[in-house]
Length: 244
Ligand SMILES: [Zn+2]
Image (tube, helix red, strand yellow):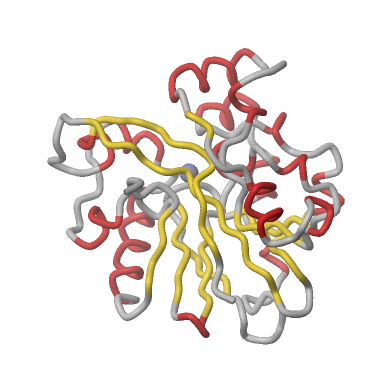
């Protein structure tokens, strides 16, 4: 099957925040996650989107302030999409984490049996809490047994299941360890946050304002955009393209 991408939440921002020379008008961005069923291993999640862990309940002050600034409106959670396919949270074999920003990891605690696949953790672990928070990374969202369940992509083959069904795609620049995925059979790429909008990649219009503060490495981000433009015979899905 082809992976399914759904919206965990929406976030409304002025277009020019996410597109160079964009309009002042607001656009409603999606916050996607993916569900894919591997023929042998069962359901795999690609990120978990924003969940109630970010928007309500007991949280640190920095996370509370972050949620108040971004004001995500929650929509479909991964459990809803999994249930439609006949699966429960405990059936999830693995969660592929494209990167550690809060809008990608906030539901991880709800999938206690899943292996966690991600790049960049050794570097993030070495940072101070403040360095991480400044980049939208809140380790309080990680499960308590995160390090036991983590398989670092750094030690894995790019062919995740060894059968050619799912291949990792390095897309550095946006955040520490930022990694996308390719499903060769479907000619489909999940580019996560390589940019916010397809338009910004196709027209080479990465935002030049406040959004630049988010980039971990701007030169690498631009190289990742160029890499995606070369994959123009593929369908490319981004996490935050506007919802229709
Ligand atoms: Zn991000």
